[in-house]
Amino acid sequence: MSGHSKWANIKHQKAAADKVKGKIFSRLAKEIMVAAKMGGGDPNGNPRLRSALTAARAANMPNVNIDRAIKKGLGELGDVTFEEIVYEGYGAGGVAVLVECLTDNRNRTTSEVRMVFDRANGNMAGAGSVAWMFKRQARFVVSGEWADEDKLMDVVLEAGVNDISVDDGVAELWADPECFEPVMQALNAAGITPDEAEQTRRPDNVTAITDVGTARQVLRLIDRLEELDDVQLVTANFEIDDAIAEQLEEEA
Image (cartoon, rainbow, N blue to C red; front, side):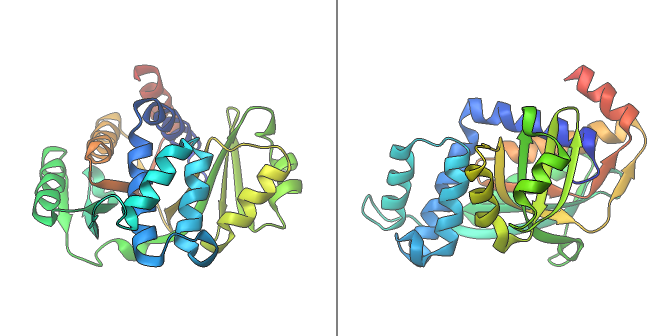
């Protein structure tokens, strides 16, 4: 999240670990399947599929996995049915949490998500309770020599990026959803391969976390939710105090 530099680094490190485990490939494959089923297998006429393929390639997802996911979505390898569900709730300290899922069994997913909230000192909330606090955004993470605000501004400003934050060699870029592909193209044209490229949600306001116990509970809630097979994206509106974030990074 923009302005939440320490948390951005924690999230960046966790995303790297997820790639090693292959978890992110599973989530991307589901999104590709759903996009292909809903709008066809031609990305030129299917914006959702086009964005999913861009994100998959940014994550270095193998072409064979991508092709298989498209074929599954088109029914060429058996029928695939996933339902999109968004769960809303609160974590420790009143942190608002959105959980986006793709599932073939609503009852199972609801039960699993509720259990995670309960065990992490959180609670589920009704539809619309927290969704209004977030807006859909395109997010990119760049590290290394290109993690420089001035350099990146020259590359992506005209493509639609409206916010850049840099901390400890990691840059986080935000843009409106429709700018996802133009920004990706601008980065690629400059020879920049982002570590992460995704369509996500961003909170309009944040809840400050100033004690380590609450921070641990919130991060545990997010970790447990992200481990669920049916979960595609977890978003929360918190900001961890820098000193606490540094302590958590040392513990990680």
